[in-house]
Amino acid sequence: MIFAIVGPTASNKSFLADNMAEYLKDSIVINFDAYQIYIEMNKGTAKPDIDFLKSHPNYKLFNFVHIDESFDVSTYQEIGRKLLEENKDKNIILVGGTGFYLKALLYDYKFIEEPQMDPNYLCDLSNEQLYERLYKLDREDALKITKNNRKRLIRALYVYDIHKKTKTEINENGKNKLLYDVVFIGICPERETLYKNIDNRVDKMIENGLIDEVNQIKSNFPNKNQALEAIGYKEFFKGISVDESIELIKKNTRHYAKRQLTYFRHQFDDVIWFEDAESAFNFIRQKY
Image (cartoon, rainbow, N blue to C red; front, side, top):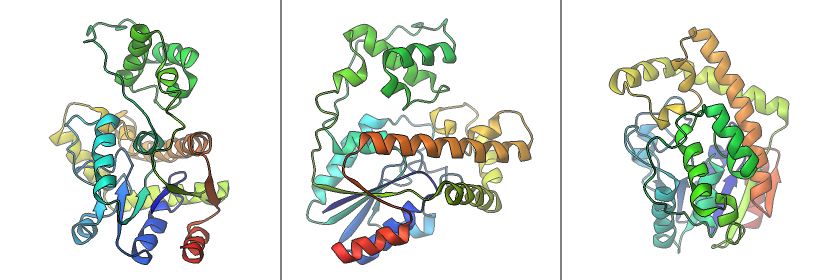
C-alpha cells in the first residue's frame, strides 16, 4: 500500500510518517521535499537528523545530493518511481512538502525535451516581468515557481515558444491520471496553531545552529545556486540583520504554507483531511 502525507509545512507530517513507519509492518519512507535531498542543508529543512537517517535505512531520498550538483524534478521522478517499483510489496509512506515532486511521481506527468536554448533568451526581462508573462500564459505553472527562480521561469516560457502550448496544456491529459493505488492523508491545523508551529520551528532551527550552517555554506559554496533559494537560507543572503532575517523567514514560511495548502487542495483528489497528526494516525490504526 502507498500512503502519501500532504499538508503545509510545520503541520507535523514527519511526526505522522514516523509513527506510521513504526506501526505498519515492512514499510519504507520516501521523501518528496525538494530541499531535504541536500546533504549540506540540515538545520533549516526540518529533515530527520543524520544519526536517525543512518540508523533507519528504510528512509529514502534524504541527504543524497550536494547543493552544487544539478538535480530537478524529472530526475526525482525517475529515481522515485524506481523505488516504488523495487518496494511494491512493502508499505510505502511518502512524506514531504513539495507538491510538484509528488505530482510528478504519482501521476502520468511527462517532461518535455526542447532544442538547446539560446543563453541570451529573454535576458532583457526582469524576474518580475518573466513571472507576469508566465502568469498570464499559465497561471497553474506560475504558482509552482517563485519569482526569484529565473531559470525555471525562462524554461517555462521557452516551452511555450517552442510548442505553442504551455506546460500545463501539454500535461493536461495525464496530470489527473494516477498511476498507483494511493491513500492520501492530509494534515491542516487551524491557522493560529499552524503559525505558532512555524514560529516555534524557526526559533528551534536558530537554537540548533542554522546561522552557523548558513555561514559554513557561504564559505564552502560562494556561488549562489537553486538550492540556496530555500526559505530559511535565502533570507541570510539579503544583507539585512540576523533578527530581520529570522522574522523574514517566519513571514516567508507562513506565505509558503498558504501556497502549499492551495496546491495540495487543488491538485490532489480524494485527500482525507485531518486537523492534526494524532487524529490522522488514529485513523490509520483503525483502518489499516
